[in-house]
Length: 386
Image (cartoon, rainbow, N blue to C red; front, side, top):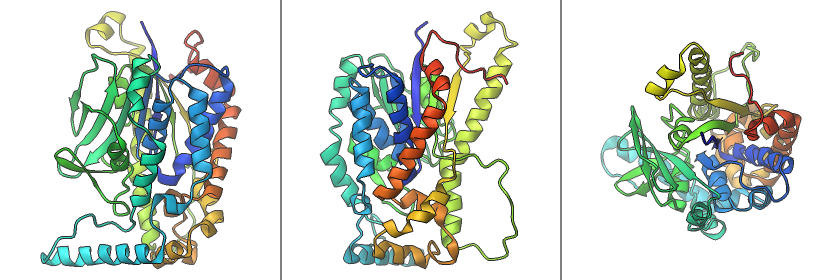
């Protein structure tokens, strides 16, 4: 049986720079001219931008990773959203006016968001020729690429996929998979963090960040044929985090950061735990029953940050333009030391991104044997029954 390795790149705004460091480490563990080790690539939110870049460059995996490395290391906030005084002020006033007027039922303002991400739209047009995704598929270097977004009208998690002939759409509770010719509109929709970036209209519906309502982040890769899945998460595990005494009321930034954690991180951890339990259960089921009900063991390897990203973000607040710092201070990001978690999603600054890339690179090399064994079909994968 042909075992395909899927790559799942999760969301997290600027945190997705960490994924580039991990990919850089993986590329150096492979022969210099090695083929793309991930026939199935799935991206959500900012991870969708990384996924599309890898898909476009699937015939030259290391070149694609180097391209990503160069882009993220040279990012500036102004590449993602408007940072000039007029842009920040007009968009913020429009956002506030939209809240007030809509609540009164007087008028509705379209494209209401706290930040204006038209610079990102222009940048994607310059750096991501999505028409080359099909070239990678036709060359046999890519089985499928999928991008997940959340439909504001239907409330469904929609996975748009482009791949080889024969791939079938799927319908599950609150989530569907549909074939599409993936373009930059899909990437913008998937990365449209709620409230901060505007929704994107695709076909008959407006879409926002793909991490919203994505209750099964690994499911698209499995539907597309992956039997082994490498996940690069942007969440540092905090199972035993210290609960100190907190007697001050949380700022808006702290609450927003907590909400984004729930959107971007919680569902992934829950599904990985569920897959581990299913794998354990399959040990007690006969091969005949497995085949009858199409049940299969799925190997999953998760690579996640070794340090809390919000702690690193605290050191790079100066990387934000003064206009954005002022806006963020109004909701408690700078003052009282709060909101660093929210900042880690929005801090698209080269210095911060380089720090995350360096960490991802070190984390990947620290697990080099584990990664090498996972990517080598002839080698035994990690034991998920422990």
